[in-house]
Image (cartoon, protein in one colour):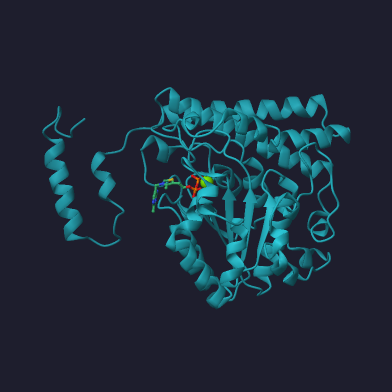
Length: 391
Ligand SMILES: Cc1ncc(C[n+]2csc(CCOP(=O)(O)OP(=O)(O)O)c2C)c(N)n1
Ligand SMILES: [Mg+2]
Protein backbone atom coordinates (compact mmCIF):
# COMPACT_ATOMS: atom_id res chain seq x y z
CA UNK A 1 0.00 0.00 0.00
CA UNK A 2 1.60 3.22 -1.10
CA UNK A 3 -0.80 5.88 0.11
CA UNK A 4 0.90 8.80 1.85
CA UNK A 5 -0.84 9.18 5.17
CA UNK A 6 0.43 12.60 6.06
CA UNK A 7 -2.51 14.91 6.50
CA UNK A 8 -3.21 17.23 3.58
CA UNK A 9 -1.78 20.19 5.49
CA UNK A 10 1.62 18.49 5.70
CA UNK A 11 1.51 17.25 2.13
CA UNK A 12 1.21 20.85 1.15
CA UNK A 13 -2.32 20.24 -0.06
CA UNK A 14 -5.29 22.37 0.78
CA UNK A 15 -6.31 22.60 4.39
CA UNK A 16 -10.04 22.29 4.62
CA UNK A 17 -12.03 24.10 7.21
CA UNK A 18 -13.50 21.24 9.13
CA UNK A 19 -16.08 23.39 10.78
CA UNK A 20 -18.28 22.19 7.95
CA UNK A 21 -18.38 18.73 9.48
CA UNK A 22 -20.62 20.23 12.12
CA UNK A 23 -23.40 20.50 9.59
CA UNK A 24 -23.47 16.86 8.63
CA UNK A 25 -26.00 14.73 10.34
CA UNK A 26 -27.92 17.76 11.54
CA UNK A 27 -31.39 18.82 10.47
CA UNK A 28 -33.61 17.34 7.84
CA UNK A 29 -30.85 16.81 5.33
CA UNK A 30 -29.56 14.02 7.54
CA UNK A 31 -32.48 11.86 6.51
CA UNK A 32 -32.36 9.76 3.41
CA UNK A 33 -29.72 8.53 1.01
CA UNK A 34 -28.71 11.94 -0.32
CA UNK A 35 -27.11 12.90 2.97
CA UNK A 36 -24.47 10.19 2.57
CA UNK A 37 -20.99 11.16 1.48
CA UNK A 38 -20.44 9.00 -1.60
CA UNK A 39 -17.67 9.40 -4.16
CA UNK A 40 -17.99 6.08 -5.98
CA UNK A 41 -21.52 4.82 -6.41
CA UNK A 42 -22.63 1.20 -6.66
CA UNK A 43 -22.21 1.23 -10.46
CA UNK A 44 -18.64 2.45 -10.18
CA UNK A 45 -19.45 6.00 -11.26
CA UNK A 46 -17.29 8.69 -9.65
CA UNK A 47 -19.21 11.67 -8.28
CA UNK A 48 -17.59 14.98 -7.51
CA UNK A 49 -17.87 16.26 -3.96
CA UNK A 50 -16.57 19.73 -3.26
CA UNK A 51 -16.16 19.03 0.43
CA UNK A 52 -14.27 15.76 0.22
CA UNK A 53 -12.57 15.43 -3.18
CA UNK A 54 -9.49 17.28 -1.93
CA UNK A 55 -8.92 14.61 0.71
CA UNK A 56 -8.39 11.94 -1.96
CA UNK A 57 -6.75 14.03 -4.66
CA UNK A 58 -3.66 11.77 -4.42
CA UNK A 59 -5.69 8.62 -5.16
CA UNK A 60 -5.35 7.74 -8.83
CA UNK A 61 -6.07 4.35 -10.42
CA UNK A 62 -2.83 2.84 -9.01
CA UNK A 63 -3.67 3.79 -5.44
CA UNK A 64 -7.26 2.64 -5.88
CA UNK A 65 -5.91 -0.68 -7.14
CA UNK A 66 -3.92 -1.00 -3.93
CA UNK A 67 -7.08 -0.41 -1.89
CA UNK A 68 -8.91 -2.91 -4.06
CA UNK A 69 -6.17 -5.49 -3.49
CA UNK A 70 -6.43 -4.94 0.27
CA UNK A 71 -10.20 -5.49 0.14
CA UNK A 72 -9.77 -8.64 -1.93
CA UNK A 73 -7.18 -9.99 0.47
CA UNK A 74 -9.21 -9.35 3.62
CA UNK A 75 -12.27 -10.87 1.96
CA UNK A 76 -10.16 -13.97 1.41
CA UNK A 77 -8.83 -13.88 4.98
CA UNK A 78 -12.43 -13.76 6.12
CA UNK A 79 -13.70 -16.61 3.95
CA UNK A 80 -10.70 -18.78 4.86
CA UNK A 81 -11.25 -18.16 8.57
CA UNK A 82 -14.95 -18.97 8.18
CA UNK A 83 -13.99 -22.23 6.47
CA UNK A 84 -11.46 -23.01 9.22
CA UNK A 85 -14.20 -22.58 11.80
CA UNK A 86 -16.56 -24.85 9.87
CA UNK A 87 -13.80 -27.46 9.76
CA UNK A 88 -13.32 -27.34 13.53
CA UNK A 89 -10.02 -25.47 13.53
CA UNK A 90 -11.46 -22.32 15.14
CA UNK A 91 -14.01 -22.12 17.93
CA UNK A 92 -15.79 -19.09 16.48
CA UNK A 93 -15.32 -16.39 13.84
CA UNK A 94 -17.15 -13.06 13.38
CA UNK A 95 -17.15 -12.43 9.61
CA UNK A 96 -16.50 -9.02 8.09
CA UNK A 97 -18.00 -9.88 4.69
CA UNK A 98 -19.54 -6.73 3.22
CA UNK A 99 -17.60 -4.35 5.47
CA UNK A 100 -14.31 -4.36 3.54
CA UNK A 101 -14.51 -0.77 2.33
CA UNK A 102 -15.34 0.61 5.77
CA UNK A 103 -12.34 -1.17 7.25
CA UNK A 104 -9.76 -0.64 4.50
CA UNK A 105 -10.79 2.94 3.73
CA UNK A 106 -10.42 3.95 7.37
CA UNK A 107 -7.54 1.60 8.25
CA UNK A 108 -5.39 2.88 5.38
CA UNK A 109 -6.01 6.49 6.40
CA UNK A 110 -4.22 6.01 9.72
CA UNK A 111 -0.61 6.67 10.62
CA UNK A 112 1.40 4.05 12.44
CA UNK A 113 1.54 6.19 15.60
CA UNK A 114 -2.25 6.46 15.80
CA UNK A 115 -3.84 3.91 18.12
CA UNK A 116 -6.83 1.72 17.33
CA UNK A 117 -9.36 0.35 19.81
CA UNK A 118 -11.62 -2.07 17.98
CA UNK A 119 -14.37 -4.59 18.49
CA UNK A 120 -14.13 -8.23 17.43
CA UNK A 121 -15.00 -7.75 13.74
CA UNK A 122 -12.20 -5.41 12.58
CA UNK A 123 -9.87 -8.02 11.07
CA UNK A 124 -9.38 -5.73 8.07
CA UNK A 125 -8.24 -2.87 10.26
CA UNK A 126 -5.87 -5.20 12.12
CA UNK A 127 -4.48 -6.31 8.74
CA UNK A 128 -3.83 -2.66 7.87
CA UNK A 129 -2.07 -2.16 11.20
CA UNK A 130 0.28 -5.02 10.37
CA UNK A 131 -1.13 -7.89 12.45
CA UNK A 132 0.24 -11.24 11.27
CA UNK A 133 -2.16 -13.59 9.52
CA UNK A 134 -2.07 -16.19 12.28
CA UNK A 135 -2.24 -13.42 14.88
CA UNK A 136 -5.69 -12.57 13.50
CA UNK A 137 -6.86 -16.10 14.25
CA UNK A 138 -5.25 -17.41 17.39
CA UNK A 139 -7.74 -15.83 19.81
CA UNK A 140 -10.54 -17.56 17.89
CA UNK A 141 -8.80 -20.89 18.31
CA UNK A 142 -8.59 -20.20 22.03
CA UNK A 143 -4.84 -20.54 22.28
CA UNK A 144 -4.19 -17.03 23.60
CA UNK A 145 -6.00 -14.09 25.11
CA UNK A 146 -4.52 -11.62 22.66
CA UNK A 147 -3.37 -12.26 19.12
CA UNK A 148 -0.70 -9.56 19.30
CA UNK A 149 1.15 -7.21 21.58
CA UNK A 150 -0.91 -3.99 21.31
CA UNK A 151 2.21 -1.81 21.32
CA UNK A 152 3.74 -3.68 18.38
CA UNK A 153 1.01 -2.48 16.00
CA UNK A 154 -0.64 0.30 18.02
CA UNK A 155 -3.93 -1.55 18.17
CA UNK A 156 -5.47 -2.85 21.38
CA UNK A 157 -6.68 -6.41 21.78
CA UNK A 158 -10.16 -6.50 20.20
CA UNK A 159 -12.89 -5.78 22.71
CA UNK A 160 -15.89 -8.07 23.10
CA UNK A 161 -17.63 -6.00 25.78
CA UNK A 162 -19.82 -3.94 23.48
CA UNK A 163 -18.81 -0.30 23.36
CA UNK A 164 -16.20 -0.43 26.15
CA UNK A 165 -13.37 0.38 23.74
CA UNK A 166 -14.78 3.86 23.10
CA UNK A 167 -13.91 4.76 26.70
CA UNK A 168 -10.45 3.24 26.31
CA UNK A 169 -9.91 5.24 23.13
CA UNK A 170 -11.07 8.47 24.75
CA UNK A 171 -8.80 7.90 27.75
CA UNK A 172 -5.89 7.18 25.41
CA UNK A 173 -6.69 10.35 23.45
CA UNK A 174 -6.51 12.37 26.67
CA UNK A 175 -3.06 10.83 27.16
CA UNK A 176 -2.04 11.91 23.65
CA UNK A 177 -3.22 15.40 24.52
CA UNK A 178 -1.16 15.40 27.72
CA UNK A 179 1.91 14.20 25.77
CA UNK A 180 1.42 16.96 23.23
CA UNK A 181 1.79 14.75 20.13
CA UNK A 182 -0.51 14.83 17.11
CA UNK A 183 -1.42 11.14 17.12
CA UNK A 184 -5.11 10.17 17.13
CA UNK A 185 -7.03 7.41 18.90
CA UNK A 186 -9.68 5.63 16.83
CA UNK A 187 -12.53 3.62 18.31
CA UNK A 188 -14.36 1.14 16.07
CA UNK A 189 -17.77 -0.09 17.15
CA UNK A 190 -21.11 -1.09 15.74
CA UNK A 191 -24.59 0.38 15.44
CA UNK A 192 -25.75 -1.68 18.41
CA UNK A 193 -22.95 -0.32 20.57
CA UNK A 194 -24.32 3.20 20.28
CA UNK A 195 -27.10 2.17 22.66
CA UNK A 196 -24.57 1.32 25.36
CA UNK A 197 -23.88 3.75 28.19
CA UNK A 198 -20.13 3.44 27.61
CA UNK A 199 -20.35 4.96 24.13
CA UNK A 200 -22.48 7.84 25.33
CA UNK A 201 -20.12 8.50 28.26
CA UNK A 202 -17.14 8.42 25.93
CA UNK A 203 -18.77 11.00 23.66
CA UNK A 204 -19.34 13.33 26.60
CA UNK A 205 -15.73 13.07 27.80
CA UNK A 206 -14.35 13.44 24.28
CA UNK A 207 -16.44 16.54 23.62
CA UNK A 208 -15.68 18.10 26.99
CA UNK A 209 -11.90 17.81 26.56
CA UNK A 210 -11.81 18.14 22.74
CA UNK A 211 -9.97 14.81 22.77
CA UNK A 212 -8.18 13.70 19.58
CA UNK A 213 -10.37 10.67 19.03
CA UNK A 214 -12.46 9.38 16.13
CA UNK A 215 -15.61 7.42 16.83
CA UNK A 216 -15.89 5.14 13.82
CA UNK A 217 -19.28 3.42 13.82
CA UNK A 218 -19.85 0.68 11.27
CA UNK A 219 -23.59 0.65 10.95
CA UNK A 220 -23.96 -2.83 9.47
CA UNK A 221 -27.74 -2.69 10.08
CA UNK A 222 -27.83 -5.34 12.80
CA UNK A 223 -26.86 -5.96 16.41
CA UNK A 224 -26.97 -9.75 16.15
CA UNK A 225 -30.67 -10.23 15.29
CA UNK A 226 -31.86 -6.71 16.16
CA UNK A 227 -32.22 -4.36 13.18
CA UNK A 228 -30.87 -0.86 13.63
CA UNK A 229 -34.39 0.52 13.11
CA UNK A 230 -35.30 -0.89 16.51
CA UNK A 231 -32.88 1.30 18.41
CA UNK A 232 -32.39 4.34 16.20
CA UNK A 233 -35.34 6.43 15.08
CA UNK A 234 -32.94 8.87 13.45
CA UNK A 235 -29.67 8.21 11.63
CA UNK A 236 -27.05 7.22 14.18
CA UNK A 237 -24.82 10.08 13.04
CA UNK A 238 -27.51 12.45 14.33
CA UNK A 239 -26.79 11.51 17.91
CA UNK A 240 -23.25 12.81 18.16
CA UNK A 241 -23.94 16.54 17.61
CA UNK A 242 -26.17 16.43 20.67
CA UNK A 243 -23.04 15.66 22.67
CA UNK A 244 -21.10 18.40 20.92
CA UNK A 245 -19.29 15.97 18.62
CA UNK A 246 -19.59 16.77 14.90
CA UNK A 247 -20.56 13.84 12.75
CA UNK A 248 -20.54 12.69 9.19
CA UNK A 249 -22.49 9.93 7.47
CA UNK A 250 -20.63 8.12 4.75
CA UNK A 251 -21.38 5.30 2.34
CA UNK A 252 -19.47 2.59 4.17
CA UNK A 253 -19.28 0.47 1.02
CA UNK A 254 -17.38 3.21 -0.83
CA UNK A 255 -13.69 2.84 0.02
CA UNK A 256 -12.80 6.20 -1.49
CA UNK A 257 -15.41 8.11 0.48
CA UNK A 258 -14.46 6.33 3.71
CA UNK A 259 -10.80 7.20 3.13
CA UNK A 260 -11.74 10.84 2.51
CA UNK A 261 -13.91 11.35 5.58
CA UNK A 262 -11.46 9.51 7.82
CA UNK A 263 -8.58 11.67 6.61
CA UNK A 264 -10.66 14.78 7.24
CA UNK A 265 -11.51 13.63 10.75
CA UNK A 266 -7.88 12.70 11.45
CA UNK A 267 -6.70 16.10 10.35
CA UNK A 268 -9.29 17.75 12.53
CA UNK A 269 -8.08 15.76 15.55
CA UNK A 270 -4.37 16.33 14.78
CA UNK A 271 -4.85 20.06 14.52
CA UNK A 272 -6.61 20.38 17.87
CA UNK A 273 -10.16 20.35 16.53
CA UNK A 274 -11.30 17.51 18.78
CA UNK A 275 -13.39 14.41 18.15
CA UNK A 276 -15.43 13.40 15.10
CA UNK A 277 -18.12 10.76 14.85
CA UNK A 278 -18.22 8.84 11.56
CA UNK A 279 -21.19 6.65 10.71
CA UNK A 280 -20.19 4.28 7.91
CA UNK A 281 -23.41 2.88 6.47
CA UNK A 282 -22.75 -0.68 5.41
CA UNK A 283 -24.20 -4.18 5.66
CA UNK A 284 -23.13 -7.39 7.33
CA UNK A 285 -23.52 -9.85 4.44
CA UNK A 286 -22.80 -12.92 6.55
CA UNK A 287 -23.91 -14.13 9.97
CA UNK A 288 -23.14 -12.20 13.18
CA UNK A 289 -20.69 -14.98 13.99
CA UNK A 290 -20.35 -18.53 12.79
CA UNK A 291 -22.73 -19.45 15.64
CA UNK A 292 -25.56 -17.39 14.12
CA UNK A 293 -28.15 -18.15 11.43
CA UNK A 294 -29.26 -14.82 9.94
CA UNK A 295 -31.92 -16.58 7.87
CA UNK A 296 -34.01 -16.62 11.05
CA UNK A 297 -34.34 -12.86 11.29
CA UNK A 298 -33.87 -11.26 7.86
CA UNK A 299 -35.16 -11.69 4.34
CA UNK A 300 -33.08 -13.05 1.50
CA UNK A 301 -34.42 -10.15 -0.60
CA UNK A 302 -32.78 -7.66 1.73
CA UNK A 303 -29.44 -9.43 1.44
CA UNK A 304 -29.79 -9.48 -2.35
CA UNK A 305 -30.45 -5.76 -2.39
CA UNK A 306 -27.21 -5.12 -0.52
CA UNK A 307 -25.30 -7.53 -2.74
CA UNK A 308 -25.84 -4.93 -5.45
CA UNK A 309 -23.91 -2.44 -3.30
CA UNK A 310 -20.87 -4.67 -2.90
CA UNK A 311 -17.79 -2.61 -1.97
CA UNK A 312 -15.47 -4.51 -4.33
CA UNK A 313 -17.69 -4.68 -7.39
CA UNK A 314 -18.00 -0.90 -7.70
CA UNK A 315 -14.22 -0.42 -7.60
CA UNK A 316 -13.82 -3.14 -10.24
CA UNK A 317 -16.39 -1.39 -12.44
CA UNK A 318 -14.62 1.95 -12.04
CA UNK A 319 -11.16 0.53 -12.70
CA UNK A 320 -12.42 -1.45 -15.68
CA UNK A 321 -13.92 1.69 -17.16
CA UNK A 322 -10.53 3.38 -16.71
CA UNK A 323 -8.81 0.40 -18.32
CA UNK A 324 -6.78 0.07 -15.12
CA UNK A 325 -7.62 -3.47 -14.03
CA UNK A 326 -5.58 -5.72 -16.31
CA UNK A 327 -5.97 -9.50 -16.42
CA UNK A 328 -2.38 -9.74 -15.25
CA UNK A 329 -3.06 -7.60 -12.16
CA UNK A 330 -6.25 -9.53 -11.42
CA UNK A 331 -4.26 -12.77 -11.51
CA UNK A 332 -1.59 -11.31 -9.23
CA UNK A 333 -4.20 -10.26 -6.67
CA UNK A 334 -5.87 -13.68 -6.82
CA UNK A 335 -2.46 -15.30 -6.33
CA UNK A 336 -1.79 -13.15 -3.28
CA UNK A 337 -5.18 -14.04 -1.80
CA UNK A 338 -4.44 -17.76 -2.33
CA UNK A 339 -1.02 -17.41 -0.70
CA UNK A 340 -2.54 -15.59 2.28
CA UNK A 341 -5.14 -18.34 2.75
CA UNK A 342 -2.48 -21.07 2.55
CA UNK A 343 -0.31 -19.29 5.12
CA UNK A 344 -3.26 -18.93 7.50
CA UNK A 345 -4.20 -22.59 7.22
CA UNK A 346 -0.65 -23.85 7.69
CA UNK A 347 -0.05 -21.49 10.60
CA UNK A 348 -3.23 -22.15 12.54
CA UNK A 349 -3.11 -25.93 12.32
CA UNK A 350 0.46 -25.97 13.64
CA UNK A 351 -0.29 -23.90 16.77
CA UNK A 352 0.49 -25.68 20.01
CA UNK A 353 -2.19 -25.80 22.71
CA UNK A 354 -1.18 -23.68 25.71
CA UNK A 355 -0.94 -24.86 29.31
CA UNK A 356 -4.56 -24.50 30.57
CA UNK A 357 -3.34 -22.75 33.72
CA UNK A 358 -1.78 -19.97 31.64
CA UNK A 359 -5.28 -18.46 31.43
CA UNK A 360 -4.57 -16.89 34.83
CA UNK A 361 -1.18 -15.42 33.90
CA UNK A 362 -2.07 -11.94 32.70
CA UNK A 363 -5.17 -11.09 34.70
CA UNK A 364 -3.20 -8.80 37.02
CA UNK A 365 0.32 -7.45 36.64
CA UNK A 366 1.03 -8.17 40.35
CA UNK A 367 0.40 -11.40 42.30
CA UNK A 368 -3.22 -11.58 43.44
CA UNK A 369 -4.57 -13.86 46.16
CA UNK A 370 -8.01 -14.27 44.53
CA UNK A 371 -6.47 -15.35 41.23
CA UNK A 372 -4.00 -17.63 43.03
CA UNK A 373 -6.95 -19.35 44.75
CA UNK A 374 -8.82 -19.82 41.46
CA UNK A 375 -5.66 -21.12 39.79
CA UNK A 376 -5.13 -23.64 42.56
CA UNK A 377 -8.77 -24.75 42.38
CA UNK A 378 -8.63 -25.16 38.60
CA UNK A 379 -5.34 -27.04 38.85
CA UNK A 380 -6.91 -29.57 41.27
CA UNK A 381 -9.92 -29.87 38.96
CA UNK A 382 -7.71 -30.58 35.92
CA UNK A 383 -5.93 -33.34 37.84
CA UNK A 384 -9.22 -35.25 38.04
CA UNK A 385 -8.89 -35.84 34.25
CA UNK A 386 -6.62 -38.25 32.41
CA UNK A 387 -2.93 -37.39 32.88
CA UNK A 388 -1.55 -35.25 35.68
CA UNK A 389 -1.87 -31.99 33.73
CA UNK A 390 -5.42 -32.73 32.67
CA UNK A 391 -4.55 -33.30 29.00
C1 LIG B 1 -21.90 -5.26 27.18
C2 LIG B 1 -22.33 -6.37 26.25
N1 LIG B 1 -23.64 -6.64 26.10
C3 LIG B 1 -24.04 -7.62 25.27
C4 LIG B 1 -23.11 -8.36 24.59
C5 LIG B 1 -23.56 -9.47 23.62
N2 LIG B 1 -23.34 -9.02 22.24
C6 LIG B 1 -22.30 -9.47 21.51
S1 LIG B 1 -22.27 -8.80 19.98
C7 LIG B 1 -23.67 -7.91 20.26
C8 LIG B 1 -24.24 -7.03 19.17
C9 LIG B 1 -23.37 -5.86 18.81
O1 LIG B 1 -23.89 -5.23 17.68
P1 LIG B 1 -23.15 -4.04 16.97
O2 LIG B 1 -22.63 -3.09 18.00
O3 LIG B 1 -24.03 -3.51 15.94
O4 LIG B 1 -21.84 -4.71 16.32
P2 LIG B 1 -21.76 -5.82 15.16
O5 LIG B 1 -21.70 -7.15 15.84
O6 LIG B 1 -22.95 -5.67 14.28
O7 LIG B 1 -20.48 -5.54 14.44
C10 LIG B 1 -24.15 -8.14 21.54
C11 LIG B 1 -25.37 -7.54 22.08
C12 LIG B 1 -21.74 -8.07 24.79
N3 LIG B 1 -20.77 -8.73 24.17
N4 LIG B 1 -21.38 -7.06 25.61
MG1 LIG C 1 -24.09 -3.95 13.93
